[in-house]
Image 1 (cartoon, rainbow, N blue to C red):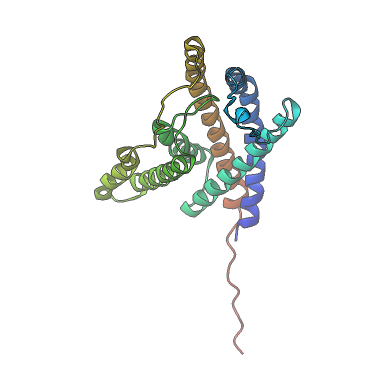
Image 2 (cartoon, rainbow, N blue to C red; image 1 turned 30 degrees about the vertical axis):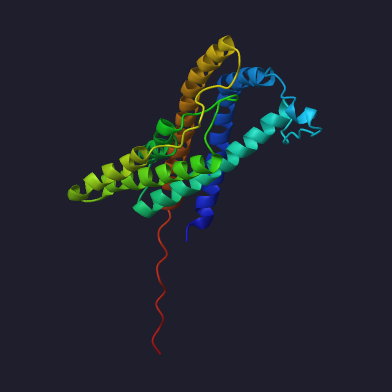
Length: 244
């Protein structure tokens, strides 16, 4: 019934959120990534494949500068669009919306999507050793799902069910996130490892702030626009057929 309004609201929200998020990334997050990539490129080249007559292939990546920035902006827009659609549907399902309600839902989503998974899988910079990708994805999905359900139980269920919400939120961390065989950085220079560790700590801080900004914009904007364009629209009344 409200799909068209929700989609337009999500598009407007995603446009604003992705621009704000991308600007923060460009000035405060990307320099950390670029600095870490310099250490990654400075690693000694493995000549094993060359000695055996094998060619090393590199995966495709966008060029630096404007091309990389445009791809980043596009990815941020699509991510913001998906998040806003999910948040808008949940808010409309629960009743009337408002900016304050949107902020509350946005912070709950920030806790579910970023903070809770980050406790087990901290944001990574180039050059870090990581566990198997599929294992990390599965644990991330499990953590986000159980944290979201747990928060919903805490917020909306009767009092005697709220303990189950806490158990659901703790369960992924009791299971434990997948860990790599080698922790930290694989760089051979101890000084480089120390500098990369410092960059990693900065990266965790800046990505935490950037994602908080993203969810702040998505939550407030979605709540405000849903209140303005959906709550203000009276529900359709069923038409009565005249009796013959």
